[in-house]
Structure formats: structure tokens, C-alpha cells
Length: 151
Image (cartoon, rainbow, N blue to C red; front, side, top):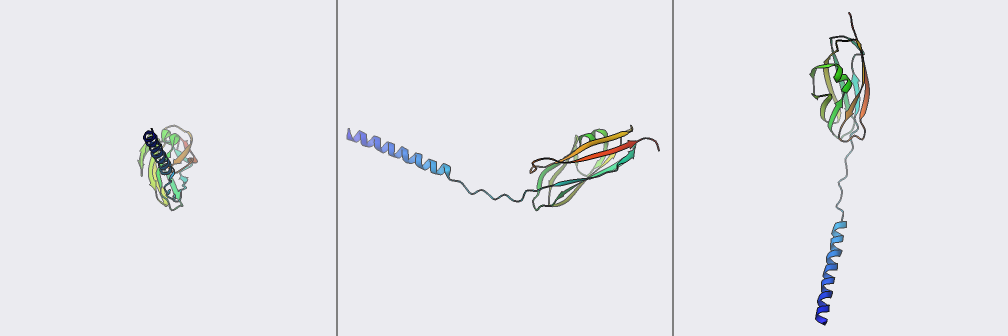
């Protein structure tokens, strides 16, 4: 009887030790790496305020990264602009209404589109949005180009 009680006591002691050391290992925090500076990008548009029907215009998107960190996976979304104008050439890959800028290192990055204006008169107004992995909200700018007919 004493031997059985001794063996059961040893089993409880061993189980308790394993439980105690498992909790210590679980609660041990490894040092977290110190995050670097978060990039904060700005967006500026350059475009003509008006153009004639069936002509070509150039729209430039200037992305400025004033920080020392690289912004990753930057894209510019221009749904209204790219739905109404036809892309003739681009400095960056365009898929649908998204211009893929990619990684933005510190400094200035410029993306340009050469577009054909629509064959009908009117004003094209929309929002252009810059998004990147580190952003908490898109950077937006309004664009408005008046397309006029005649000479």
C-alpha cells in the first residue's frame, strides 16, 4: 500500500513539473523586432484641364515617399478615368483600372499614361486612389478633364 501511494505521488509530482515547465515555456516571450519607419506616401496628378475629342493627353502620377522606408505593392486605381479614356501607352503595367507601381523606394516615382480622349464631349470627373501595403487608408486625389468638340 505504501509503495502504491509512493508511486502515485511520484506520478503527480512529475505531471505537475511538466505542467509548470510547459507554462514557463509558453509564456516566454521572444524579443520582437523593432519595426522600422512606416512609409507615408503622397500623390500628385498632372493633367490638362481640357482637351478636344479624339486627341491624346498625358496624365502623370507623382508618388512621393519622404521616409527612409520602402512602400510595398503600390497601386493607383483610376476607375472613371480609365473607363472613359483609352490607354495608348504607359510607363507601368495597367490591369483593368489599376496601375501597378510596385515597391516605392524613398524619393519620387512618376507613372505616366498617354490616353486618347473620348469621341464625345463632356466632363470626366473621378477619384484616383493610391494604395500600398503599409497604408491604413488610401491616398486620394480628384481628377476632372473637360472634353470638348470642334476646333
